[in-house]
Picture (spheres, rainbow, N blue to C red):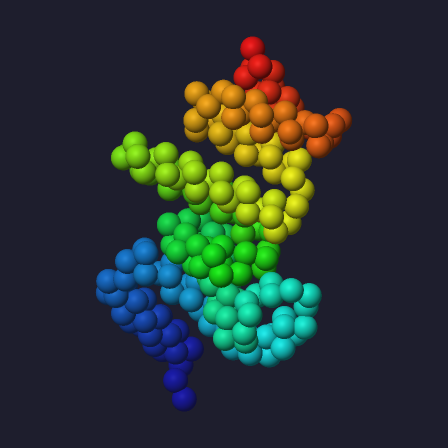
Length: 202
């Protein structure tokens, strides 16, 4: 029978070797983030087939037209959400894009978070033409949110604010969008929408 201090020494040595082995792995930060997200996605994907039948019973093709589409949508939805929640928006963009184009009705958060992801792309872009294209994409995200989830007055307000920040010379367009938002929202209009409407009018 080993003495207590011998057992402790063996335990410490084993932990040291395990830690050493881990430290020697040359895993990038990017790979670690991807592995963490994929682990979570794989867990949810194992339940995807069971979820599809329930999903298909909901009104409208929220997660795709076929069971295969649904599995693909659920996987990308889980993947982009994991990356986004980890703060890794670079990796979140590609699966988010898949959700946006293939199953936009899955969640309103696709549009709320999508606005943030598009603004990130805009801020990273150095080419003036492409920067303008990202603004157009952001405006399209707002329009699609209205198409799928309504709340037209509120979303038009967000669209006007974004346009005012990113393309301030579009005075007439900003005025028209913010005016329509205020007409629809009335007393519920947000302060920043009222402000930019007043400024564009002046």
